[in-house]
Image (tube, rainbow, N blue to C red; front, side, top):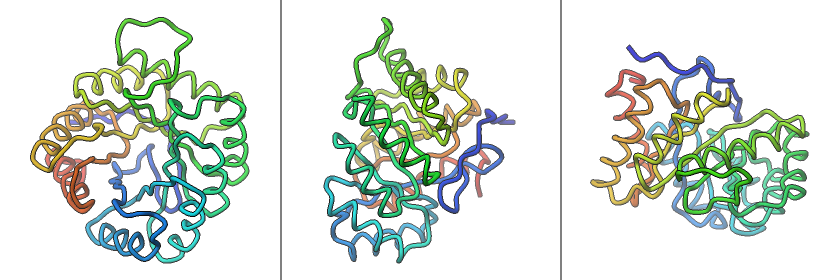
Length: 255
């Protein structure tokens, strides 16, 4: 029997991540977020497939502003994926995003992060600290392995957010290498109470990506680690959602 790690529940729109909530299934649109109709249509498709939270890319201000209209036409929470420019996170918050994903590897200035955190705290909007092995920030702590570097980067970012009186936090530590990903999540699970978002970076085409994701995500879920999952495939996001549910069903975590 799987005994899930007890994590702090975090509310994202109408969805709850962590605590006693079931492991939630996420996906990400493959459309240009600035194309509101195409993005809305794809979110409607994946919602019918069972997707519970959707993430959209926010490469510029137009994409950030589009969130307002997109959100009016969908029924699941929407998360803004932010890279490089902290100002896009501020715009996405103003547009009504239910959550943010920030990559500490490319938004490194503590003052910029603080501006986003304060705006998110005012709106009670959660932030996912999205650590990626391919774009790690410099670490203040020496370590021997990639997964230790990933965990240290996450812990340093958590410390920054907590210092700003912010605890609406989720954490992910993704790598293309499955063993590295597994070890990173195992280590972080014992060091923080926050919910964990599981995934394998760019898992690949449906056949290989499904295998890689099932192995990496499945091992962690069996060990009780993980509160929400996204299967990353080079395919329509409905494939990601159906694969995620098959992984959960195989472990009797969802039906």
